[in-house]
Length: 296
Image (cartoon, rainbow, N blue to C red; front, side, top):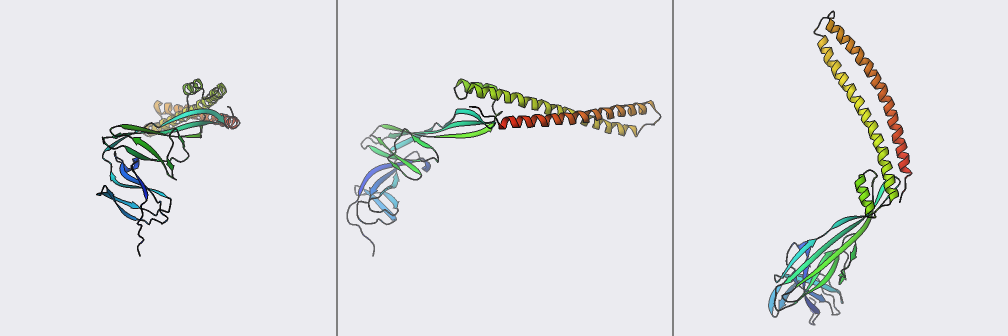
């Protein structure tokens, strides 16, 4: 009841390299094409090379006309070195609704270097390179594309080396707070042609408005610090007053000090209220100004 195929099928020798395997060597493999009119069923396969046992492989379902890569042993004659050169570049900056809208270029570049130590046999190396979501492939042309992989073929002659560089790029936008950068950085971006003088001018104005808000915040913090110091001093004096006679000059000095501190606390409370009102006004004006700010 077992299906037996007695006719030959097409195949070619390859070496298969996948960085995900974590090995510096590719795998010896075969690319088979089901050139029969029958279905090849899943199961184990024993591989023989020139009548000698070479290794085992596992095959899935293969319909007529379909291709499959079978890896059966480590190819110790080929060494592999991989090198990463990924980077992020800012392409353009503009202001949209008070936010810096930054267009970025993300580049993922991997170079594969293969050395064939076999002096007699050339190698065709199939490189399985992962596809990155939302990235566009540059330069290198794949021999095959699957849902998750690019497959590249690299010819590596006997006793020679070869190289493959795969570059994937993605352009994306992000929005960040308008004060996320400092002025020297913005000026550098302008020099590089990544933003306009109008964006720099708007950025500078935003910095000035934010600086004014920061000053008022610092005033409020100073008021609160002084009030806390007065409160702490009054607590200390109260404890001291418990231990002295009310008829002494020192007690009278403490009473005078309390009176002066209470007057200062009243003044600070009034100042704090006015300063907070100023802060709220500045923040509201700044928020409205930012919401309407659009500069290219």
